[in-house]
Length: 338
Image 1 (tube, rainbow, N blue to C red):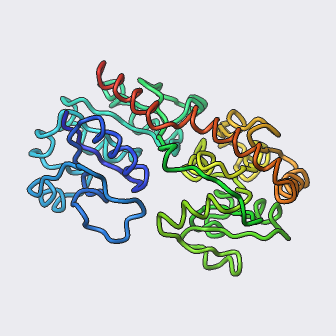
Image 2: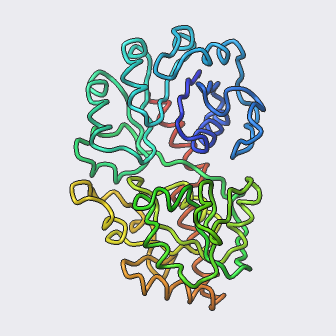
Image 3: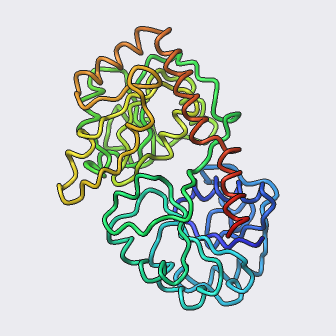
């Protein structure tokens, strides 16, 4: 099939377009990072093998915003997948509604977003969700499928934990403060050898690990001992969690109360899915007590056998949840009945 894909997150876009390409579909990334082959030397993920390329469509797409898809590109597509942005759905709807249109959530939906696409949902818009926890959103519009993003277990593996350090991957951690639980994470890691990786962290001083190239990022997850996780509001879980758990680095996660205490009471929709993934002391650690979280980090740094056990069990959980082969079959089945 011919899939027109409109993304808002370059890494999730990469993972999904690569998966669809491996399923044998022609995928055109509208104004995305993978619209032209080898077009961006700073891509955070590698180029995709056998990616469909149509120079005419790509040049045409550059002339029009995502909210005004040219008719020729609409006519080319069998399926249109729109990642998260409700404005793209709303402003193109009258010209795309005759197609099979999928709104693909990425864990960022809110009552406002659900309401924006409500009419289109009633008029035939399909929805593929990122997490079952989205059903707690006020005004939830349902789902035609729940399909997580996938990771290749053969690429994300071989944790060794040789560096007795706590790490985290978050862009602009301090700048986004309460949305990324900056203050809580700082309390938890205080006094431990630690680095925060990602762009926009220059204001963290000595904690700033910078933004890493792809291979070095994978090596950093392999080599360090502990991954501290708080996530971002309102995502149920994030890409960083998936890649850390799949690599096998032991995860120490903030509990639901710690995560939600920075959110206004009116927005506490119990979105956080990590407690459903982490079994405390078995495949990771999770707590609402800062002292306990610090104790878990200390144990993992000092007890190599404990860290190895947590690593192995955490990775098993990641494979159960996010294995690319499983996710690929879920998409194949969904497309077959679409």
